[in-house]
Length: 593
Image (cartoon, rainbow, N blue to C red):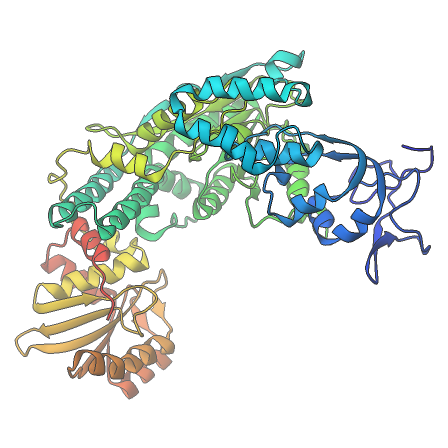
């Protein structure tokens, strides 16, 4: 600082420091003490966020700063982002950037971060792209050597250290290299084989296996396989069902080999009185784990993801830091569920010393950042890292293939940290999974009522289409988002060759109260009669509910819509064998009218 004076802080959470916040003025920011001073105040120190810097960039740019320190400097990696432009606009005599990931996505990150601190040594971005980025793309076999050349070119402008090299007293990090192999349950295996078979059958029925439609099917199947390896219900309904007791929650989670392993692991951690972080990507899974694990262990389990506020005017418990503080201060066993993206940087959770990557992130750098939430300065106990990997008894599984690809990507990163971390891509996984999947024709999973009740709304629509298809000349399962109020169009059904319009409503409730669904299918009639040049005298509403509310029945009577509930579904499934692979096939072959 240019002379000693009282420090001025903003957004400072530390106790014992007097906080004087910045206040909004008519055209920017000033100090909120009633004076007319601007930010250009000798002897001041401002602690702020990149968001505030971006929103009030003109006020910050007007001030003369002696030092500008950019913590988590990867926030300035995008040269076209306003917060990067705002950081570069600061008039500072000395600048320093601190980051654990100088190259997070591609080599251009290091250019932008260094250009924020010390413009010039790497030239313009066009020059840097020509001299380094394109070279690394063209000469992949020399990637590590080029990274070393770049590191030498940057020289003393970049100082690097690793925890293992520099931090004395940091405990061991155990595990994280080898996967923990967990065999999928029989139910998971049946669903897994069904997804594989659906892709292979559609591929055999396609003249060009590389067409866009086939690629989209494989992308969807990739997501389905990821869901199945976590829990079979995720494929059906996108979430895990509810339970009313600890025993029911345990039984529900044990339908997954991976979640059964998780319970055994957490039981052991509980016996040791220690805390665990569980990383997973899907929000539905995060919510389900928080509910069921909370019910099993009698805990309130925090969930930190993109929906969790970074700051709040209300009590601190509603924010990420508030949730972490509450979790850390609670004595004994504890579990925290996190997204590897939202918790990837800036969080210190050294109260936990067990890190479980339940659902792997496709970027190895993101996964390493997530692990480092517990393995950092302040950690006093050994940190255990777990990689539960679901295996298939007959073929390499999604989890196992993803693990091998992640290890391969990690091996390509230079020890100098300047080789861009490569993300596992969908085409790589598709090629590795479906090109070696073998014959999936042995899968013959029959849908019963219990399975039907766990289907997602998409697959329930496809199931209804399959049930009608056996007695119809033609079936059209409409595309999502442009169905004009009708999910299934049935042409030439039954002995009388009727044409039907069908609306489907999947629900966990015993009673369906949806007058809107009735009016929706009735409103679809004019469009389909004009588009197809046919008459649709019958309209139907199918649901998984047992019964209908009075107003739903009244609306159906007025609109001449036939209502079918769970009893119809049970009767049809008992009389007609319908396979899960057929339902997946139907969902892949939706048509736009």
